[in-house]
Length: 140
Image 1 (cartoon, rainbow, N blue to C red):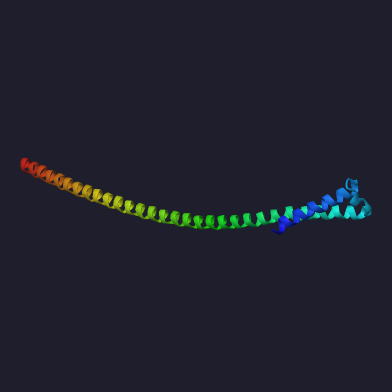
Image 2: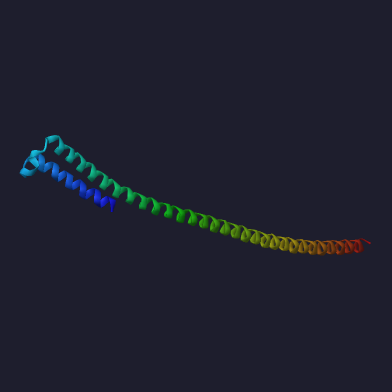
């Protein structure tokens, strides 16, 4: 409202000043020139105030919107960071579980190989003893 009134009064003063200087309407020619120049200056100031008042109101609204958007962005950033952390923690847990399973599988394979090696050693030792016993009997 103030902005609109400022713009209207600025236009009125500009018009009065221009009419007085140009002498188009004889009513305004009786006044001294400096009054008409003052009216033009007041009109220009009124227009400037009206224009900048409107822009500052728009700037305030834009700042409010930017602040709201900034808050929303900050909240989303926090949620994203939290989701990343949860995802990372879950990935670490899965990797640990896979490592444990893999380690357990390797242990079982190693244990089976040891048993197989032990069994082969026993068979080899038994065969060696039998061969040695047979050779001893043959030599006697």
